[in-house]
Length: 156
Image (tube, rainbow, N blue to C red; front, side, top):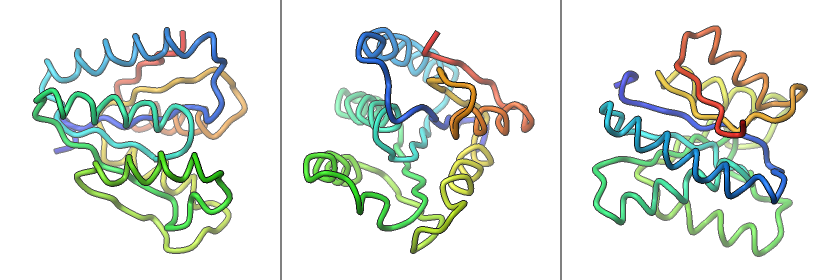
């Protein structure tokens, strides 16, 4: 299954002027992977890129694509400190998922990193939106490189 799986990783905050370009490149890369036989896409569910990617997969599923959306979440209360609007979007996305995997019931230091490693370990492909070198996204991409994943950065 790993060879048919792609994970997403990216920053929570993206420059608004870059978002349209990122979405276009993300869409193109998803189309490319679907043509290669990738059928499973994993999102970490965080604000920003993770949710943009998840929303795009949901839209493609509604268009009839035979693909699955999985969420790999760091903990059950990931959205605890989010605004009501952010929580609503998050729960709407989760409701559309084919499966949800929680790394931990409760938040602890390191659960985000463990979630990121889980996603990479399940995947053969990684689509990222990497803009900042000192970040969790950068660490995840580095881990994906060590694991030999095919990585595409849609932020450049």
